[in-house]
Image 1 (cartoon, one colour):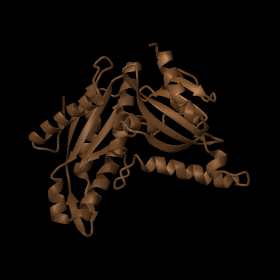
Image 2 (spheres, helix red, strand yellow; image 1 turned 180 degrees about the horizontal axis):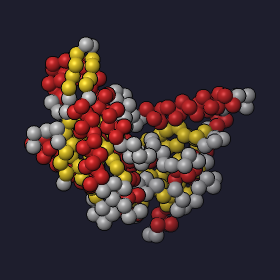
Image 3 (tube, one colour; image 1 turned 180 degrees about the vertical axis):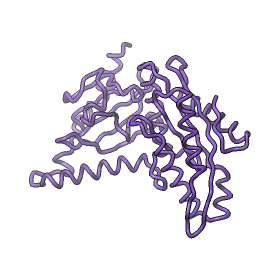
Image 4 (spheres, rainbow, N blue to C red; image 1 turned 120 degrees about the horizontal axis):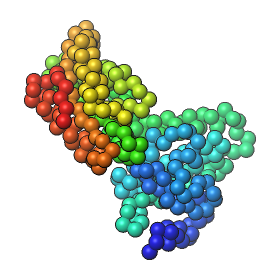
Length: 299
């Protein structure tokens, strides 16, 4: 069966509920490309799926990538400059490849916006949607991105690095002896240390394409698209020195901390997955800890 025939078969199976939507499209969530579309002409095959929202970049809270990773149906609300949509993302198999069926329903009139609503109310609702989408990918304690963001963003960054023939570096960070900080000064102080470290790390990874996420516990992951290993190690060393020189004051306590860093880099032809690259950064971090901590190591 051809790709076109397989796509049409999926579209035909959804016609029974065509009153529930205006448009469906098949998405490759990693490349962000539309494979095929049906219904009202919102976007054409081959176009970038996020172009519909007219925000100039891929969605931070990519519902299709989440459906792809979690292998379950996910729903969210999104908007264009003049419409509100309910978007349902469903993982399916298409010619032995997992893709996402996106079903879009225009809810501008039926859900929220009525003809008497003011432009101000429309702006407020759009702000609420942006806030909810942002919350889904933010670590509530530190304010940096969360583990879900890593799962959704890193595979896309790797595809972009490969197609643009660029390198991509990762840095894994672990706050040294963090359990001792909690045991000595308390969890409030521990939380304060996490927040301050997140701020320092984010301030050192300042390019528009760089991002920082809390990987778990006292560990952070930094992605540096386009950076080679030498640049990544320089940035990691800047972070290390800044954290080492930081004097943290919390409830009249003075806390000194250090952190260990593991760096790695992938090239366009390496074919590494996000999981494999993270594992390499973690291996480098392990070496840094074995070398006595408060150091930068790389693989």
